[in-house]
Amino acid sequence: MTTTSYDAIILGGGAAGLMAAATAGQRGRRVLVVDHARAVGAKILISGGGRCNFTNIGTAADRFVSANPHFAKSALGRYTAADFLALVERHGIAWHEKTLGQLFCDGSARQIVDLLLAECAAGQVRIACGFPVRDVAHGDGAYRVTFGNEEASAPSLVIATGGPSIPKIGASDFAYHLAKRFGLKLVEPRPALVPLTLAGEEALFRELSGVSTEVVARVGKASFREAALFTHRGLSGPSILQVSSYWRHGEEVGVDFLPERGSGWLREAKRAAPRASLKRVLGLPDRLADALVERLALTGELANLPDRALEAAERRLADWRFRPSGTEGYAKAEVTVGGISTAELSSRTMEARRVPGLYAIGEAVDVTGWLGGYNFQWAWSSGWAAGQAL
Image 1 (cartoon, helix red, strand yellow):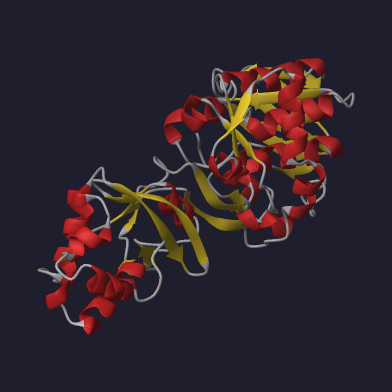
Image 2 (cartoon, one colour):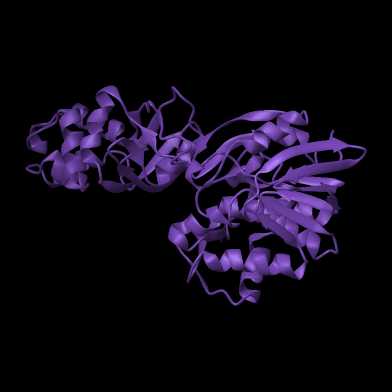
């Protein structure tokens, strides 16, 4: 078997890997991308309902979960959302902004994949798809990768194979096994941006499957005001997906069902409409209001309900406690929290501190963004940072 030499080998043809490849290739580096899938960019293609939420104009390091909350600042500051947006516009891709700074393609997510492939072509990057990596070896200052019937070597190797979320598109924990092989520490991976499940007494809320309403969801110090959705298994919707990245097994999730209402609103409602029922003044979807009133055990006209009982109901509605039994796992998780420890990497270059020439980028690293384009921006920024250093 003959060995072909490159300046860098990138394992993984997702957002981060292709960005790193294009950046390094256009700097004159000879780059090889190897991906086990038959085509690159599978996760890009399914994102944003097929329109790819490719970045968020509100990107900042405090919108990422990591054992080191400062690690992402360097890469995010040097390759920004505005930089990627300029690239999108240079390729003539029409886009629009949805809520909370989220940017989407007007057309198809395929446009983002085509952009990355065009940028790789401009850098004469070789992309080898449909070839699982059979072996990775390191010695004499070179990394040797065996894939298919080929072997390639390079002084630099980039781990860009992501995390295990959404296994149906080929995602796996390959990055973690490779990191361990080179002695890199991991932060325990777990599903993130994932629906939460309810069991026991709380499973009664499953009867509300399909009901959605805007709430504030909280876990610890993290809180998000967006829609929550009841499902046949538990809780979902943007606000729940957001707090799931912070949630640990055994913790409670607090939900404010009426974030617009101030203190004392129920007593005021009683004075203004004494003959109204609690269900009526809640102003929530009927099935949800019925379920909450049933659990509060406050029926009849407000005039007949003691102020003390109304105050207690108000407090509970503002901080309704759920104790999830778990999550729907990697199969339904959009991303993975945890991964290769940032303590092992340079925040400027993404190179492993103790293993020269080894880099890790994107979702493989312990940096996980909020819902809404932040994880793609981390892919672009970390990929660009590594590409500049290769």
